[in-house]
Each structure stands twice: as structure tokens, then as C-alpha cells.
Length: 385
Image 1: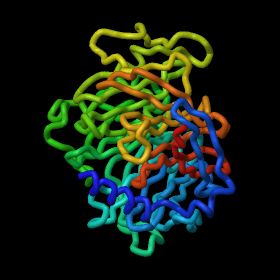
Image 2 (image 1 turned 180 degrees about the horizontal axis):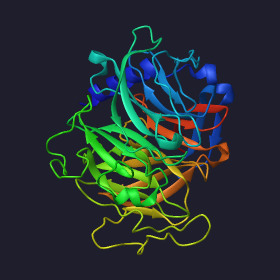
Image 3 (image 1 turned 135 degrees about the vertical axis):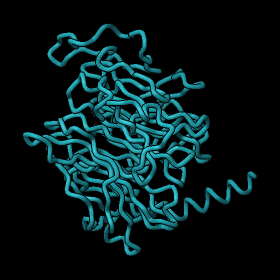
């Protein structure tokens, strides 16, 4: 087994890892509790990049840019032209092209899933949509793109779209949907604002979703009472689904998402309005009938993408979860036992950049995106002392 793991790690490194020499000039060193960290720029000049996915067979990375472009970054850091076949996005405020994930069967079906802000609502409002298309063999574009989920009604004037995508072990697709800055809708089961939904990869609704068959309730809903969830990842050891979301002024939180549960917003929150006034609907930090978060930041770091670390390359990082932070401009490392967070460390603050996404690459490195006009894709590794 050890030999097999070693060979697999070497194969993954050879199929993804860019030439170190090609990028070493821009590498930066940062301190950590476990040894120094090296952040090496792989690609630069990205326009507010939002998410990254890893292509197999030395084909590089897919990166979304919020203004509406999907690009391929080659393993030597070259940016492709924008891919064709990407849907038109509503690129205003926080809206635009958001998450990207590959189908679990990508080598067979070449399906790429995108979430994005879509216009067309009353008065010029928008909502989150999810669709999928087939990536061309020459990586030039997506074909046969189809929308598989639309957030209805469309209520956003530019805020709180979510949105992250994750497949579970059984192949169901989970999608996080923000409440469009319309707080009460997170508790309304006839709307898709402030929800985590569960669908089949083609958009069909599973018969065993918790609210299927209930009159006036959207059958896609898996959980509700979310504010603006921008992190979603499957715990590789337990199979539980972890979500993180922005609080208002204070109260960013991590939740373990369970079937049919109410996560409280806006009835339960640790935060207040940006104007320093209380949230009008709030009844306290915890409210009977709602699920309390597993971890809360009383001062909001502005959390975003999330990744569990289960690779062999950096032993001290094993069984940790990493979360990007926009407001505090850091990468947050969390240690946990079961579903309880027991230790936190802030990393990469010296980059002085909003960290939008973090993913574990198949080579065992972390890959981090900075959400800037001249955004950067970094490869991040640990150098134990």
C-alpha cells in the first residue's frame, strides 16, 4: 500500500506540477507554526478569479474570472483565451462567473459545472444559476451548455449569490445559494434564497430530498437558513458536508450540513448590521429549532473557498481544513477533531491579497486564488523546519 501511494503521488506530481524553475523567481516565503511556507505564482494577470479546478493528464487548470471568462492555465503558467460556450453572466457587484467543478466522471463525459449570477429578474434583479457543458478535447470551449438549476425568484441587486458546488460520495450535486441580501427569504421554503440544495448531476430532484411532496416548498432544498455561503467541501474522512458562510458585521461561521435542518439566519446570528444596529429579525446567537454553527468568528475574516487536506506530501497538514479569507486577506488553517474545530492559524498574510479560493491539488500542494484586478494563482507548500 505504501509503495502504491508513493507511486501515485509521484504520478500526480508529474502530471500537474509546473516547472519549479519557471516560477521560482516569484516565490515568497512566509512563517507558520509548522515550518516556513512557500507561495509560488503559477499564473498572474487573472481578472478577479473566483475558482480553480484541476484538469487531468497534464492539461493544467480551469479558472473562472468573475467578469464572465473561463480560462485554461497551462502547467507552465500560460493563460488561454476565454473559452467559448460559457453562458452570459450578470457581472455586477458580487455577481458574475463563480464556481467551477469537474464531473466525478470527467474522463468519460468531460462535463464541467459552473455557477454564476444570471439576470432577468423583475426590475433588473439577478439570481444564481448552475449549468454544465462538455469541454472540447482541444480545451477551446464548452459545447451543449445547459442550465440545470435556477435560483427563483431572482432578488439580488448585486449581493449574496453564494455559490459553491460539491459532489458527495454518491454523486449528488450540492449547491450553496445566498439569500440575495433579502434576509427573511432564508427562512422561506417556497424560495431558493439562503439554501443548500441537492440535485442529480442533470438537475433532476432526488425523490428522497427532505421536502419533496410538500405543498408550497421547493423540492430542491436540502437545508435552509443560510446567509451567503461561499465555502463548501466534503469531509473526506467522515463524508459529511461542511459549509462556511459570511455573517453580517461579525458572525462568519462553519456548519456541518444535515438533511432538512434550519441553520438559523436571520433568526440566529453572532453578527450585527454594518450600521452597528441589531439584525431586526434576530432572536439571539442561538435559537431553539435551529442548528448552531460548529465554529464562529465574532470578527468576520470574510471567509470563502474551503479545502480539506488529505494528501501525503505535507504530513503536518493532514486532517486540517483550509479556508480563504477576503477581508483579513489570509489563508486560515483549522485543526479539528470529529466535527469540532480545536485550533486555528492564520497564514499568508504577507501576500496582502484577498484569498478567494483554496483547493488541494492532486500533487499534494495547495492552490490559492487571489481575488484582485491582477489576480494570481499560487502553489503553496510547506517547508518543515
